[in-house]
Image 1: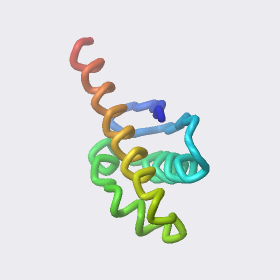
Image 2: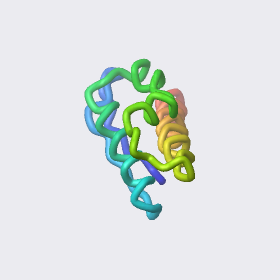
Image 3: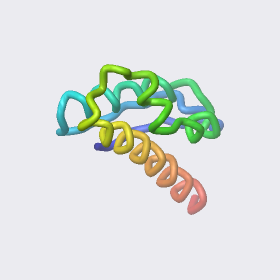
Length: 88
């Protein structure tokens, strides 16, 4: 999974994701992308896998790792943004 973020003035203007994973991975990626679009980076970092699981009650227990994958990938994308920003 990958997230592509357009960030301006610490606000995530656009959030898109890509994955080759299963339908539940797509569902979690879409939910995270929708949740963070238009939010500040600080608000985006407040998202947790538990919040995602609460928002998708139909997610089967054997696919809960998809929520963890989506949120951790978002965190990594934000971290990559900060590293790039710090170097510029």
